[in-house]
Image (cartoon, rainbow over the protein chains, first blue to last red):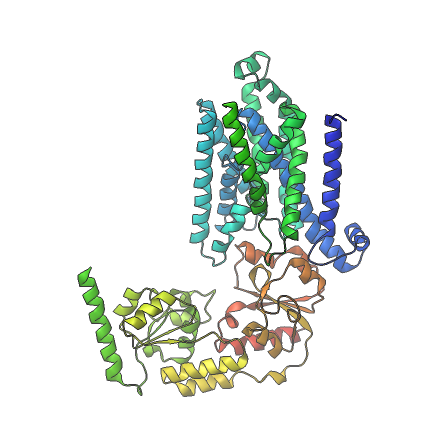
Length: 331
Length: 271
């Protein structure tokens, strides 16, 4: 049977549903499926209601939204910059988002104003994306763009670590690893409410921009002659990517490789057209992030490993294979 | 370089000479502490004139209950050069603090006494007594020891988690555990994987029905993820009673422990 797009969407949705149910059913406290369902519905015993609704549900919602944001942003940035390696992690956008969030959170600029945290992440992501776009616009080659992204990411990560070391709080220095590696452990519904709407708005923007990105595959001149409003398209993608990545990083730290891995894994199946790839990468990103989060929780470690550790463990070898192939195809 | 080495050697010799001249019997007059916990012991037991150097942490009102007193006393950096310049006749530290500095100071002939942080009330009494002997202030130390009540006095007050930032519980071998017992509370960390200390997952906290959550924080600060953990909305929705308790009352093992016990008891008996 030939794998069609409809099969793929159906399959991804079923996988997502199964992963979501597993995610709600598993945790350090064993809860039977029936009790968990009642707890989620709000009719169960107090303990099950609390654990399901206040601990496991926000974690699930954040994994889905953040993963979707990273997947969609990866696919859209790769199309806009016409660079197969342009993922939010590798290009430093996630790191600048983390820096924005770190500055707001630890320097107390946003204390008493809950929205300051996601807005800090958003501002950081916007700044990072604009830097990239500026470089691309000056005609930087694929590889110099990625190098610049690596430099930008290292700079932002180093600045975050420096701020965390200098902050007058003994715990801050230990939290460097959270911001650099990401985690969804013990995030609350408040965090979900702060990040999920922004992230979904970003995914929606990118989805809307995706059909215009299709024409860009032929080159900017041809795209323009086909009637694509390039400045507007750039603005849409930059704003969409920043929205899809920044607020998520602000509540869950930097989760790498999802935006790189997912579009590349899907391309052989659904082809290169961004109009198809962007929404599917959102679904795929959600599935990969949720799966990675499940692995974090299931590993029999004393303290649970950070989410970014798992995505990097899978993503980095994938990147190596990719670079190997890029060399062969002479890109 | 050579000059510096000579200077260091001369300083060390001078200090050794002071120690020898002072003899073993007379109490030390220039005591330096290398760690917040030993800072607190000095501030409680030593005469202010005996203190030649504390760490800067002793002046931090969040961490130190005696910040005001420490502000009038000299502070120093925990670096061998700075310490040698103070020409101390006794240096006190905890065994974990500044290990390489301590080794160097000892090599240079300075007297360093290590006071391990107490993990039980008995050990706390021993630590206070030993500090009193080292400083020649035995009557002060004995007065502090007398202020710590015997364990049997508290009426049972239910079960409790003692939680520090990030959901860490200190475990049975800690003064925190002793503090719960002294206040009549049963430590829920016992008979769990966290009996010897560790980070308790939020779900575990919600499922083990606690009567009381003792939230041991550094007062008035929440700008870290670890400290924010204790403000997780799910914790606020449990039926457990929340009792905030300043961490500096028990974390170090000073006579502040007695304060901690009486504050916890007062909070528990309040309606």
